[in-house]
Amino acid sequence: MSTLISRYAQRFAALLAAPAGATLIGFIQAGAGAVARTLQARSRETVNAADFGFDSAASAAVNAAALQAAVDSLAASGGLVKISRSAVAYQFDTGILIPDGVGITGDGMWNTLLRYTGVGTGLMAKTVADETCKTALSKFTLQLAGIGARGIDYSRWMYSHFDDIRIANQAGNTQTGLRAVISNVAWTCYQNHFGRIVLDGLDTGWYVDSTVAQYANRTHVVNVVFTNCAKGFNVQAVQGMVVAKQQHNEQTGVGVTLGAGVDRIAFGVTEQETNSGGSLWSIDPAANRVTEGAQIIHAGADGSGAGIGKRAFRVLDWDDGIQWSGATTATMMAKLYADDDTGLKGTGIRSLAGLGTAAVTVSGWAGKSVALVYGVSVAIDASQGRDFTATANNATAFAIAAPTNATTGQRITVMVRNTSGGALGAVTWNAVFKLAAWTSPANGFSRSIDFRFDGTNWVEVGRTTVDVPN
Image 1 (cartoon, rainbow, N blue to C red):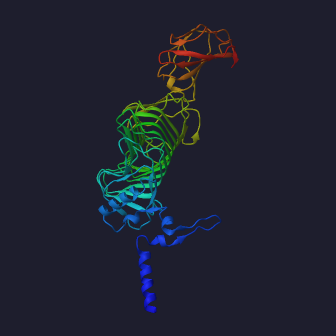
Image 2 (cartoon, rainbow, N blue to C red):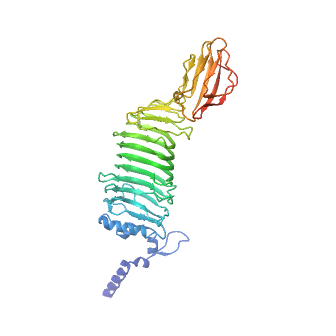
Image 3 (cartoon, one colour):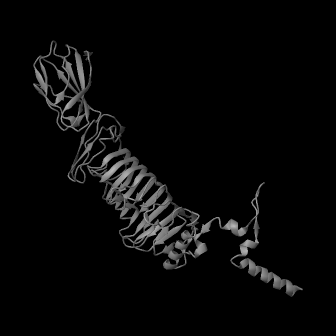
């Protein structure tokens, strides 16, 4: 009898150990209304890459085939492939093509380590013809060991999520972490969301460009950290990108490079902790509608020489944006508030040390009041402030000259104060001022006119209609 029981037990154990063994075991969830299923049906709700032979002890070639098989297994239904934590990195030598609706998730960026040893792109969309796909990638570190390797190419993903991901240089080569380069007008790289991203030790952390009239559009970045990267963001062409927070540590090149193809990009909080010879900003003058919110520099350069401590400013006229012209001079052309090392002042923008060694000049509305030098000709340098006051202390006739260093779209207010003790002499406005008839203020009073520069003339947009006491 014992022999017979032993034989049946062995047979039953063999059945359970067979590929279909889980169909012989029942499962029911706790709670009213739960229905019975097999253990196999329950287990197949999730796919683990290990189910296809993905193993930290396996060769890079075996793992590449295994991970590809794992994501392909969900091509019809969609879903997530889980990669479990491992003390040793999972190596793979061929880029993984991820089908539409399929994602990859690990156990956290410090617990699930992937190492791509190839020279192309580690993770990208698997497409048919010119379609665009959706994915969700999260909770892993992707190490790049191949020369010129790229971590994740999201050029053909839309409505996708990338969260809790670290991409790191493993072998000291010229790699790129995240990349989107649009080379076909049929591609739609749209509404992609990036959460907690760390880009570590790379030649270029994040590269965005387009070779056709179709750009990456409406990219949202919640938090990105660049550590020991030669270059941080290199965005040559994009339409609509919001970076809520970025941090740069130990950078050796430019933290943020914005090219001529940039349109509508905004940075909320920018922090540079430590600089290793690089600078923070390099912005092409043709970049359109660029907005920077708050900036904190602990050490290093802001894109124009020595660090300036902390600074906050906002672009009030978005169409003007923030523009930097050339490698030798730079001009921030916008209506701005700025601060100095003691905090937000709202009283002007300090000149910054140059872009590299060049000088930076500031133009547009700096929120600063300027007392003009009174004489027979009163000069105005429009780059020096927003409000300009000419105080006439005698009855000599004088002329208000054409403002210099003007920026298209800029607005200024010109006030004439009478402290002469009597009537003013004749006031002549240069021909570039387009205004209605002028009435000089009586002694002890002032009058003001608001002008907007259209690129050629200063056109009146408002004025005080009666005398205002000094």
